[in-house]
Image 1 (cartoon, rainbow, N blue to C red):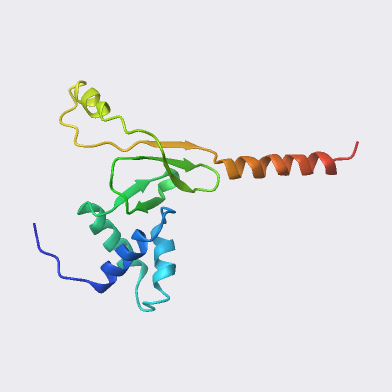
Image 2: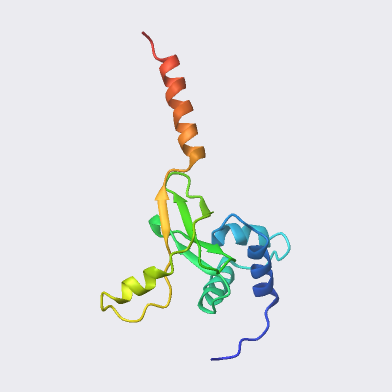
Length: 142
């Protein structure tokens, strides 16, 4: 494997991600880093996030619509993605390590790992939708 030279910008990206629990997009990290590194480019952020994911130092979460979120926690865990607001959160579920063996039994090949992502509508979006419906019912003429 090629040895990568040390990069202050990569360290800043990794530091930003390690301090978060919100599974940010590259744009979110870029906006944060511009305060300290005004000359950093969005392309630099994307390149370094992809490199860190390839190296296994962070996890890339693919979401609907092609949006990618990033997670500093590379341990086996599940995620929930809200289809309305796009938020990504960790799910406190026990990881089922038997899934890898079950997948291998299909004859597909050697399974090294898996990522389990649940999609739905988060509680905040559900509550906001209920309030909006209530307001519409009150405002509707009889």
